[in-house]
Image (cartoon, rainbow, N blue to C red; front, top):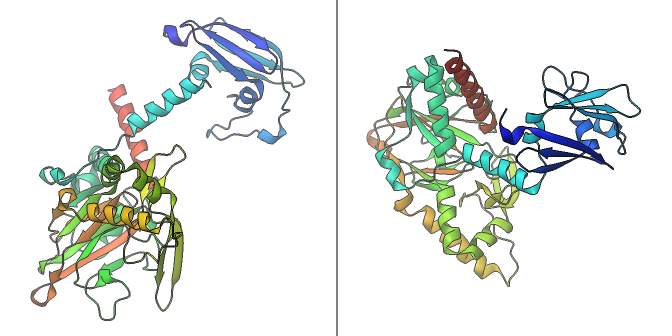
Length: 389
């Protein structure tokens, strides 16, 4: 046991247990919090889920007796209950409730989940994997999924150019997210298309389905034919663009992260709308999404005093997204697949001439939480193998 996680003494005070650590720190734990998080099998199932209902705990609960054991654990016998709780020093240290401790844990989680922002320089070292390897090896799959987590996109080479294979790739880490386009959709020139993606026109970088709630968080595109002239794929790191926009103008960042806009998609069978901010922020005020699709955004409803400033911010963002300094570009060949985090990385393509060849992709959507869950399990299991070797 390290010196910092060694308990010197515990003191009962009204409503709060005070723990004095050997490193000089002092931590306060409300009794209600400790009873609610008792780790015994009578309150926590073997699967890790809580058995106790928080609403049923007496908010004025207190100890009958508190003991610091020889094993440096804290045992609490609860007043009015035939129940005792036993907390390890490590658990108590890991759950300190001071602002500084909470901020420290938040910073550690951020460091572990750090994302790499990128621009055109990533063209020199594209994140990529090989289908045969990732479908046969947990190590290779872990590396490829980590690239997706870190960069927001990755390429997968040598995926058999057969219909439906893009869904098989999803099954390596999660589940297909079905939309009005179906579980699987073809991306090629069609007659009377309901979406510009099904034409040979160029598409500016965008996120898909911002009109949907929830938006699919992953998109995969798999190339089956690639003989047309043009049609280069383009990806842009929205988080990098946002970071540069914020550095240029915090006011523009504020407008784009607080002003609601509406996205809409409609055809003969669907009418889908969502109102959200273009830049999404999490509960800590940190960027966690970009929603940008100039084809589906509706007329802005911004009051007349702020409309000019909002347009300035929107156009500045759009020009950054369209700046080739941020472009990663590649020509998809038959059997190539790429995946993007649809709330971070925008994708587009250059126009192509389909009169002298074919450009045929199949696409599907999936959810990021499935990918991150699979990645976490792989990391855990691979670490256990290393430890036991």
